[in-house]
Length: 182
Length: 89
Image (cartoon, rainbow over all chains, first blue to last red; front, top):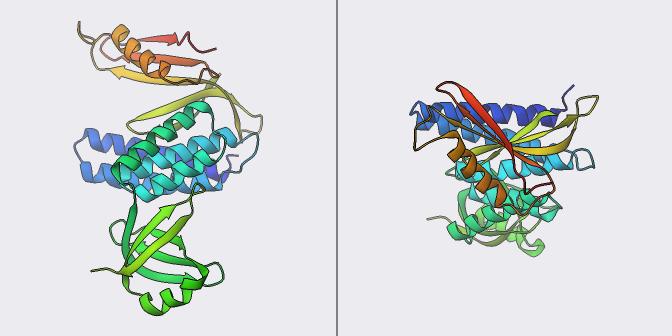
């Protein structure tokens, strides 16, 4: 029986096929929608594939696939996160080359990341805030400095905020600046 | 050896040839496979020209640890050609 992460990956690839077909038929909106669905499934597959001797090749394939799907879907922060997650390990050389190529494209396109969205949750124990990006409706977990979390909750709770963030080489999103969005 | 996995890479899909485990839960990669297609062959767009383009793409990689194969299918007749990238192992 296929493991759950493989089922998710196969379904993601089916959506990629659907996206290509829709594009060939000139239905750009459906093509985009199928690609987004593919990304969310591939993201789950990549993150849940175990890291061991038997599955590491597949895990790096899925991480790279998720990174490219995020890039093509316009989710640049996710694309960078998955790229860095892949590069943080020891991927096969050709996958590493492809991830580095994507990393260069991302840096050319957008050196720093800004999110605008609703500040919806805070986890004081782990110093994490949750922001829902207004464009993509994607939810991002953002690590904030311990000494700032109370003040951030007090000043910005449930407000529409603009956030400058950077991504560590393990894919964690770190807060740099937060302010009320215009 | 058969196709054991495929994954997305920008505008195309990357295929992996290999062998599945007995319980069908993981695979051992044995080779990479590039697949391309031509609707109908013309003097300016032949199978051999497409093979050359695809081999050039494959050979850009510094990774020679997995053998790489290229298949081009022409749907007019139809016919297909498969070649191995000789720069890989």
